[in-house]
Image (cartoon, rainbow, N blue to C red; front, top):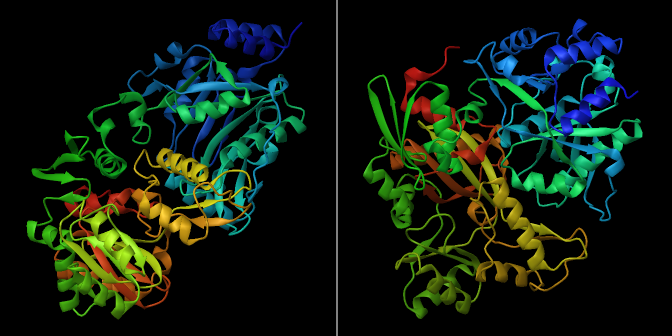
Length: 581
């Protein structure tokens, strides 16, 4: 006779799950009493409630309703979800995620070797901080290690992918051994919380984490690995299909809360918003602020609360005056206002005829070309050292604005400081797009692969354009598009660090030098703008030297997790909506 759980699992695969009453009767026939000790495993962000260990639908529903504020409980392997939902239809909902299973007899080891990172268990407080920074960057709940069910009581294990060159955490995953967690007679396991740094340039991190978990549990004599994936996550499903996972006809139930609101409400007008607008709308929803989506594609929405009504386009709102907006958009005016305020700015002049341009180049040796009114790095070329490069860059920039600027080039790191309400809220070093060689693929193939990863991680907001500026950066490093990049060779494929052209961020808020913070606040006050992203060239985030480059009146606040940019933005617009301490 098959073990009960195995027979039940086979029926799940065929979509023939029994009712609670029949399931409990079959457990009784098998001589076990699953309802005697309902299993709830705390994962640091909430609990996993093992559905078939609860004696009846009411007890499972009541446990879901005991979910703690700020956590997310999940009831899985629910045999008769309609009976659980009927206990509290206003509070519980059926999760639209798919459950997938890989039987280890179907698993095939990898044929490709991914290098440049190692997998190990979370071991220290610093590891937990790195994992939580990663999870928050992916809009996931952080882990409180103090809440974790102990390992000897069946608690989960967290693993991390660590970059061998930098030591940074670039991925994480959680695994649960079902045999130790709830004495699963069919010896299963499950995967949760898979996340890869959206700025990671190393390929294969997610796949290696999944394979590591599979092979770890195989070595423990287990039989399968289950996981839950959003029904519309095509990229993840493609990976899981390649590894041999197939659909499991089981159900998952959650309690309605502000964290999972989109899952039970379904797509609304805000579904078409880009990440920069969506992060603000979601924060407004959490506070009970009324949201009207005016134009999702353009990022326009209106917020109303307590008789106050404010229109926004992403982080640009009615609180920013037309004059302040103009001062930021016109880089000549930005330069003038900041210079008059005693702030450090580069030398600058409008592009003119070839002789004037050559004279500027000879004075500064290395220059930057940019349109006077431009955004997202369009038309910007940096570190130009010949008049031919300058003239070509001017022609390219004129596609975005007839007025083109020449600026002196300054070595250093690209620093973005976000100022909201004349206070520094976030600071990050922006790094240009880069690829890492594997000794097998051409430069253009690596760029295309990295661009796809960046697009997926940013909902299409970031990609690496295969344009003249990218080609110039590749050639300056001694390569061509068809060159095979040596293993572990790091190649910067852009000179500018703009996120829309594939750049990435490193949060430096906690180490920002006071001189830089003060300069940013002075700049915001000089421009008289309540929300602004200021770009500076610096030697390091913790050193005082700087040169202002430009100001962005519509800063992308979604790029600065885990800093509370959305919270401070809504605080500014609706100060009375702030949660009670």
